[in-house]
Image (cartoon, rainbow over all chains, first blue to last red; front, side):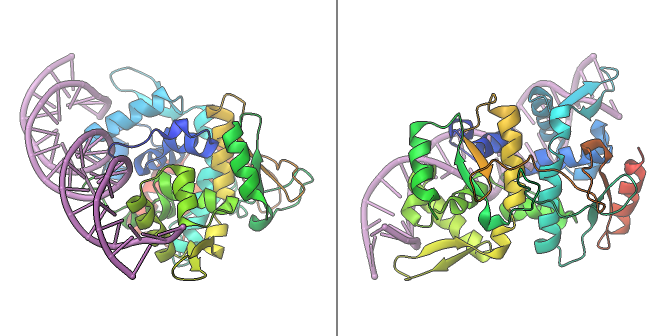
Length: 159
Length: 159
DNA sequence: CTGTATCCTTAAAGATACTG
DNA sequence: CAGTATCTTTAAGGATACAG
C-alpha cells in the first residue's frame, strides 16, 4: 500500500468493496467468523496474525459494520452482522475459484448446504433465471455513475 | 504489506485466491479487462495507477494465467483467459455487495445479461437448486485438508 | 484472555526520467 | 505507445513488552 490512493473515491462498487475489505487478513478473518471463530485468541492462532494487526483489523471490521462485538467487554465475541453474512456469496465464489485454479483439484475446504452436500459453483443468473456466461455479462453504468464513468464504460463496453 | 506471511501456505483456497489476486489493483485491472480495456495506457488512465506498478501487475496477471498478451509485442493487448473470465461470479458478487452496503443505493455500475437486463444478486445454490442462506452455508474439510485444518474446522464448524 | 503501545523492518506504491 | 529503471515515501505488518 504505502501512500495508496483512496479506493473509495473511484466511484466503483468493487473499489468500495475492496476499500472495505480489501486485504488478505480482513477476508480471512471474515472466513474464520463464518467458521464459527469468535475469540481474539482463536483468530490469532488460526491465522498466525500479529496481535496488534488483528486488533486493528477487528476494530475496522466492527467499525465497518461487518462484525459486531458481543458479550462481556473483557472477553468479547466477534460475530458477523447481516452485512458480514452477505459477503458469503462473494467469499464462496472466490473460494471456488481458488479451488479450481489454485488448489490442484484438492480443495482443502468446500462449501456445502446445511446437509453437508456441496453447493453448486456460484454463477451469475439473469433475471429470467438462466445462467449468464462470463463473457456474456455486461457492466453498465448505474444510477450513481458520473459522466466520466458513463462515457468510459460506454466507450469500452461495446463488444 | 511488508514482511508478509505467504498466504499461499495457509492451505485454504480463499487464501490462495487472495494470494493470486489479493490486492486492489489486481482486481480492478481484471474488472477493466472485463469492460474491454486492453491497452497499457488505457488501464493506466482508467485507474490512475503508476506505470511501474501497472507494469508489474500486468506481468503478474499474465504469469498467473489470468490475462494473456496478444497482438504485436510492441503494442500488445491484454485479454482475459478462461481462468480470468471465471472470476466473474466472484467479481459480480463483490460488486453487488459494494452496491448494497457501500454505495448508498446508487450503484455506479450494474451487471447485466447480454440484453442489458440487470442480473439477480449472486447467491449460493445447493445441489438441489435451492438458494442457501448465508447462515446455512457450511464450510467443511475437502480432500486437500490437512489434519490440522480438519480438526480446526470440525471443532469450530459445529453450529 | 484481550487487548494497547512501541519499535523496527520491508515491501508496496508514487513520481519521474529514460528507452525501444 | 509500452514499458523499464531509479529513487523516495509511507504505511502495513511482525515482534514484543506491558496493562486491565
